[in-house]
Image 1 (cartoon, rainbow, N blue to C red):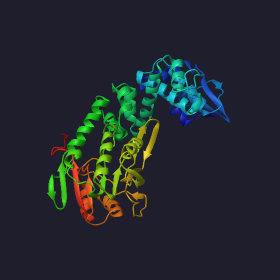
Image 2: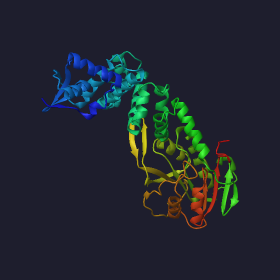
Image 3: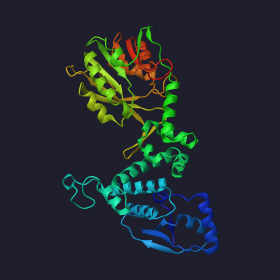
Image 4: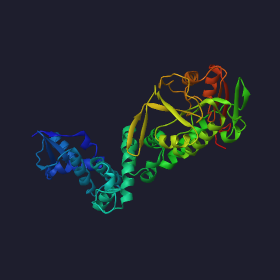
Length: 423
């Protein structure tokens, strides 16, 4: 008999602790393998569903074993059986049980798909209506459907964390990070690799503690540009909504900016759109870097004030970012550059390639700093020498330096104080 260990199924299993593995090995050497292995006959092979540790010990020590065959239509059904079987174990930690419940919920969502619009409602079968899958899973396991959905979010992030830093995922499943179940799914995708690193190194008392320390380190390592007018740069310290209020209407050629991406900063995009609509010339253009996760909200706020024109993709030339949120698990290899114009603007008289090779990592002065070389090329694509460039989120001033190199004028605003802290 040929028994196959399927990697998709194996990854859904909660591994035994070292002491549990030792006890199991002592047991099978003394009493043999009493419980049968559970297999699924798929074509000409038997896929192992339950008994992976016993099978490894049988191979290691030449022990005999019996099997029980299960029948499934496809791998999805087999995986669901494995997850339900794990939930029946008594020795799972709270975090492990939440992980398995979340994996089951996510797997069943994938298998079921979304119900048609005309089948949404509470009076239909368990797999009909909004949140139908979570209601069904909750009814099977005696929990609240919100608990099921939160478990699904937890499972997504833990599985992503396991790919970034397996030690961090193991620490969470062993209960070493007390607020992981509630706080981990709320971590911004951009911060997840750093949070994983702190957990893996044992430097995180909690998820909240890890995020706060990462934010503090970012502020402390930021080196804001000097305030004042020098070398053709006009740098103003403070909130752009206040310190750039004196810029005359319809006087700016280009706004090139890189606002912060996390959800907590989304309202700034509405204010940016209103500011751009006021100060841009009829021939002016807003060029805004953005992340992908909140792009629909960003565009909705900007297009309240400006006309959507196009979007460029800036290709990452360094390490890719890992995004996990809302069921997404993505190696992020490009960044949007949004292009908007005033509503009364004539068509842009420019010709450009919308795939832009990035300038590589440049974080010497600011954690969110963009490449100066990259910015020079972008400015030259959309403007002429002596154009007025404004950046409401100037950071370390890389866009200001780019404007100088492109023979353009520059006004920037940055809210950070001299010690890197927000006022």
